[in-house]
Image (cartoon, rainbow, N blue to C red; front, top):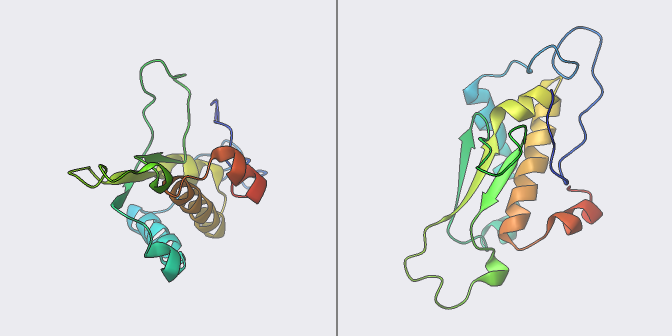
Amino acid sequence: MPASLPPGLPIVPDGNDDGRAGDGGGPFPMSEDEFEAAVGDALDRIPPELAKTMNNVAVFIEDDYTPQPGEDPDTVLLGLYEGVPLTERDSWWDAGSLPDRITIYRQPILELCTSREDVVEEVTVTVVHEIAHHFGISDARLHELGWG
């Protein structure tokens, strides 16, 4: 896949020899319902004490990221956090602010993966990565922690 992967995204796994995803053979075949279940499972893995501290954030699944004006048209994202991190919220923030938005992009993840287990792992890493941004953790720090 010709794309510019932003820093902090997982490395594309080695392909296999059976012509499936990961070696240019197309995305790993997984239904939208199965993918949604994988995202739900990843969210369920968030420790309850951490989940309780998340505030005004919604999680969405979309097929693919559409690069914004000025971005490289080949930009590929697995997930995106949009909002105000908890570490940057002041007392004014609660007054009518829209929820933060975490979007998980299905197609790019399926393009990287060669098995259901790969998809589940990639979804988990992506969900944790984006939730970490909600808590104000930078891409650089996520790299240091192994969640880049």
